Length: 319
Image 1 (cartoon, one colour):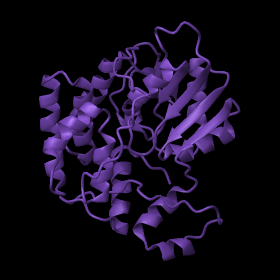
Image 2 (cartoon, helix red, strand yellow; image 1 turned 30 degrees about the vertical axis):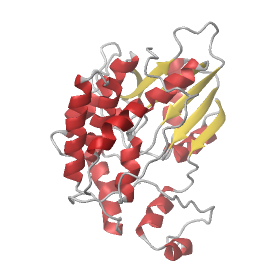
Image 3 (cartoon, one colour; image 1 turned 60 degrees about the horizontal axis):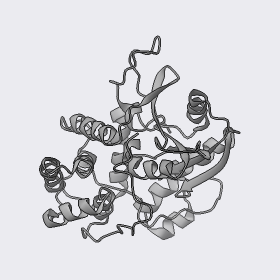
Image 4 (spheres, rainbow, N blue to C red; image 1 turned 45 degrees about the vertical axis):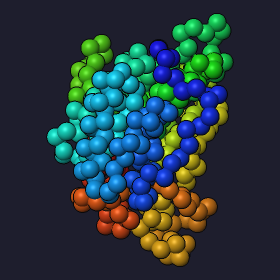
């Protein structure tokens, strides 16, 4: 592993900036500013519209320009910004996903270790400090949520590895590489090509497969975004999970959707028949309006379309 681009955990935080009057664009555009250099590159060309096409064009043009300047990590995240806003079926989406993933792999000198799972493959990476004088003090097993790619987390995970942890980061069913049919392995018999895997709430099985593959006896499980809910499912069914970190605490994904689609009073009434539980009311969880040229506040049909569109793309969402 190359730690050149590892996040400096002792440096001041980059912070969250006001980049757009549209909450969705504002959240996502902050997401791709991984370094101070990225901020300096992006602010002069910040789009002043809410037209998605303008943001995609800006990200792609900027990625090409800063890569020529040697800003490889920043260029990769600008490519990811463009790819994120492209709808499934856009012919530019898959090539730009591959560009982002291979760029991050190159920046950190990492290659995926493909974990056999249910006749398919889970992309996984093992990060350890190549210059460590002592063995890792513990093992962290990390995964993302609904729309993240695990490679996005390399800068911070490399920094964690430098602090003396063994980090295993993977994508489970319905995430990132598990939705890509082109994953291949040349070493695992009968698994020359993977099949797509649907998202599921039952997360103990993929975690168990990863722990088995890497020979982990006990671990700290960390789930991010929707992974904050998946990690609790995993810990309930996998005894090797000794510690659990949920970023954020997510106990009801349906309520996330309902809270964004309907007025708060209606959400509190919990018109959907479910067992009462602690309410989860995110202030800035992700939402978008696919199929239109502008970003705008979500409507019920938009949220259904967003989820259904991703589900159709890779049979990604299992209800």
